[in-house]
Image (tube, rainbow, N blue to C red; front, side, top):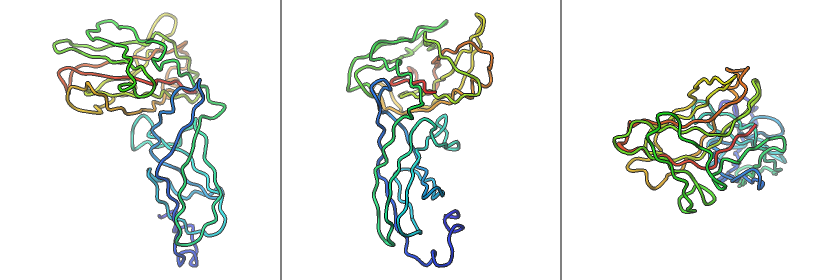
Length: 276
């Protein structure tokens, strides 16, 4: 509102505002880009290149300027899942529309986004063709590749990891290398469900040696036994890690968990993508 008022002259303030509304957003993907799973938490609105506001979805945004306007909408996310770190997601396109604005009217839009043509999307870790996670040293947990569209976040398959009561460590390592360049922008997208806090991180590998780098600790998406998943999505900033290890040859994703909230932690994973 401060931005809006500061941008207005006296006659604009006297006008009755119009409203632009967006109840839903959609993401379209090509076959090689994996599912259309997203967690767009806010929309960044511009009119003729000038910022109108950044609004949580669903949106009801007042417009004071009248007449024909070109509205541009950018999708925003919670970077690393943190509400205090909200950014425009750099790999989604914008949505553009032209509207003739009249005072007192409401205008409904459904922003449609897709990946930029310059985005390199590795969606091979979607579990539809198999599982790339292996047991790490000290693992006491059980891993299953489930084939059930009623359980998977999207598609047919997902992975379930369970740390049985009395066991001490759940630890799995993705066998596929991730190539990251220091100074470049890269994200990991992942759908998950858990009843217990777990860690997501990378091993930085150079010359046969590896350094363990915890990145995020994801808190439970549900309570209880966790057998029926309640899916959430996370966008994890990999560029930040690459900048800390500029001479690293490759990285490996890992998942790790010990008992905290529940006696028998359960983790579901699906739709893991590397986007750069």
